[in-house]
Length: 115
Image (tube, rainbow, N blue to C red):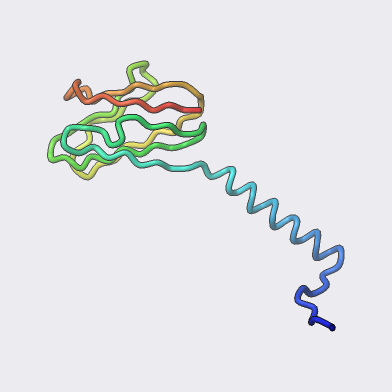
């Protein structure tokens, strides 16, 4: 029984091009780190505890009618006051535990763990 050939022949040049395309796609995926959203709503950060890989950008968006800040306790990042609808982003380039708060409402606390 003969089955039709499903994969066309591409030769060495075709294999090299496919390998190059695969390398570019994989490289692009690694160069474009993840972006993770955190919402600020009802005077809380959601989620309050977040674990992300190194290279991740976290973006906080204020959905409250009151202004809030995103300020790390170690001074690593600090937003301006964010009005409703405003966002602040920070890219985490080192592993560690980053505790942060809203300086306007200091009971609002949360943590980003970077592995």
